[in-house]
Image 1: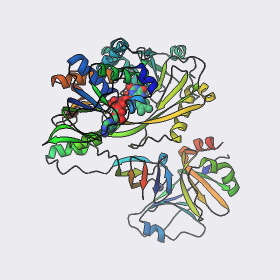
Image 2 (image 1 turned 90 degrees about the vertical axis):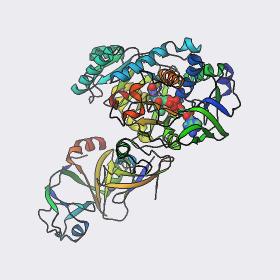
Image 3 (image 1 turned 60 degrees about the vertical axis):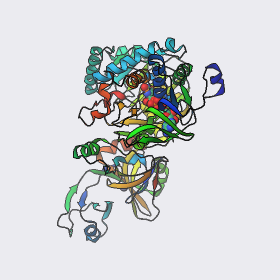
Image 4 (image 1 turned 135 degrees about the vertical axis):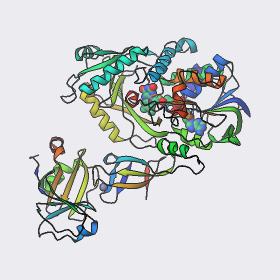
Length: 78
Length: 126
Length: 402
Ligand SMILES: Cc1cc2nc3c(=O)[nH]c(=O)nc-3n(C[C@H](O)[C@H](O)[C@H](O)COP(=O)(O)OP(=O)(O)OC[C@H]3O[C@@H](n4cnc5c(N)ncnc54)[C@H](O)[C@@H]3O)c2cc1C
Ligand SMILES: [Zn+2]
């Protein structure tokens, strides 16, 4: 099971959180402004590996946090 | 589990420094929900050194004081995460699957939750 | 796949060649069905299916096998109805018993809002050729006597929509039958061969890099389920896909017959009985994207609690097995098939938690697209470029994770 450390509340199971999406940029190789918008709105990196993402501690302090997670093992990195 | 009762108080959202420095009257229990968010049980006024602070009467929480034994006997099996050992401390998270909070002191414990969840929490704790 | 099964099928494993007309990455239902229809309908047999593990190792061997066409938008209903009709004759076409059983699916409604949604769904389904009718609580009870109409006092049943053609089929038999059908016609299926990159000539994709060396190809189709973003990234193709785990579990045998498939979109769980008599229970997918196949206790706990509101007899059964698959869920909850903007590289993806029922139609229509170079009308709405042109096919309420 996935445990996520909250700086205010401590280490908690994933059920206490809401997933807020990956933090990502639009790849530099996409230069057309409209294509960049499409990418920003619809596309995901969906990385198999380490990703940086936002989580909301809904059942605790109700604050957003940024988490680095390995999606292949579902573990949070320090 | 006897009913949880309304806990009137003040809710203050302000800069962490202003909350750290706030002059609470002696004996007031102040729960720091987040660095910038505090709930002062029973308080009616406070002087906060932050021009942008929001200070409002809070009547949305219900709670009940328990003994440490009641905590061990009735609550601990419903809590998946480790309780803090350095006391006093606020602990918040799911208890029996309901968002709730504990104010832990050496001799007693306050269980509290948002009023909307009170019936469900009491029901699940049996 | 074990030796026992292999001896009963005629699967002739081949040595990899250096080049094929078409290389399909991923030996799940969609990859194998596409290979079969390329050979059977279009005479294109110089085809390889490259599979990292064993065929059916992905979601095609992990799903809860529900086949139905009661979707929420016309484009989807027509597509899934076509797939359901192909399934109905598939045992004959592939000469293989797949345990295809028509059961009917009941979608429960507990609120007036849900009743309105189900009424709208059934009218839309009817108009698009997929029979769906509304049932009263008493009619639901007659079809499913074990159901507690009070929903444990908490989720009262106000009614349901009912789609009588819904069915189940043995999932690995579907996979093996398509593999056998394709291999008999000369298709190569290369197991334990992982694709690790794509060969490029400029932007064009000209083949695959594999754990057993490079293989060149006229066209490459990605049919890798939850791993699609990694594969597409080799071709610099961006996808509106997130990979989420979906779990399910079975109990020990329930000695009575449980006829229909019971689904609840408000509680987000569904229940059916396997041919062996076990109760099979599924629920919503995990909230965070992940490639991990770990199952969780909290899933078991929450989905068991939901199902027991409806079916109190489940209390007396034991959990036998729980498992996970990783699902390619698209941003509009509809599949994505066809061209990617990169020459020589196509995808069949976005099958998410509901693509088992789509295997025959997905395979048949992808094969037609590869063979003819033209997108068949049933696939037209599901092109990748719909996101750029603001013509998304939003259908989140119909997928119901099964
Ligand atoms: C628990 C669960 C329940 C479900 N219930 C239903 C249901 O009731 N009804 C329904 O219609 N759908 C259901 N689904 C969804 C359905 O299973 C999938 O949508 C469908 O099986 C997808 O088939 P596929 O061929 O696209 O992918 P998969 O079957 O996942 O096949 C992809 C294959 O690609 C291989 N692969 C991956 N990467 C590589 C690589 N780099 N190189 C080579 N090979 C690679 C994998 O090993 C795998 O075998 C469920 C899914 C799950 C997990
Ligand atoms: Zn927190």
